[in-house]
Image (tube, rainbow, N blue to C red):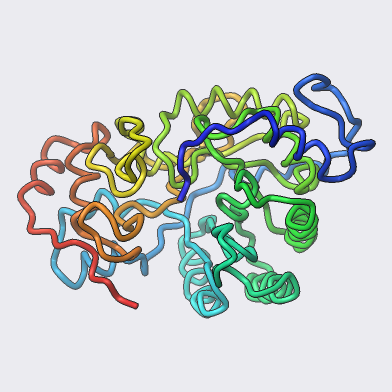
Length: 343
């Protein structure tokens, strides 16, 4: 997922017609048009603490194995991914923990139909099923306010079309109307142009969202992500954004287009800066750990699943300039097996 392919040209023309070519101008040529009415911002991260998930796989592994070396990951706030109807059953415990901490939970909604653009059974089986799932999420959240990062890869994916745009825009409106704060995933700095991405964000409901997310599950540097995000923000009403810094501590690995090693469990990766709601970066609402550090990218790089891998966690800690020398040494000395391949 999240390959760093830059595709413009024909896709720009396609994106420009998602809502009808007559109504949707090319923002790369006319950044000040069309006139859009934006929902007022609610600033969910302002003066907020980020919730630490006591039931993350890293935290469970740490407790079960006495693995104190995992604390640089297990002790930090991370997003909770909601990938299926079954994952909704875990929400009450997470929300209870967040309320006990007087902290803000960050969720990732990740069940859009045809999630992998491969026409396989990935994501919801239909738009109707997805709508029901979002409704269940809204009911489970109730009065507890959360930040929802909406559908990683759903917008920059090659299979993004008018139908997906309408479904995402509807979802944004429903979540925001229910009192939640939505940040639409926009991709990353090495994927698509800001003009193309702005067209898609407008079609997918950015006017009703709190903002957008950058670098989710990727490893582009914070500086590159912020620069790209600011350029994109200028094209969509100066909407703020969040940056995923969970694995970008030493930047992206070398670009090897003939191999999955460029993106799938590469050796060149490290924990990024600790999550914060006070990044001190104009236009940036928060630096977050959206991708959960230690989770495998797939069956590659010596891993056999998408689940938590102590070996991946060890690598991220050991390589990170944001971890103390003692913490790095402790991780390097640990025995860390790969992901366990659970179904």
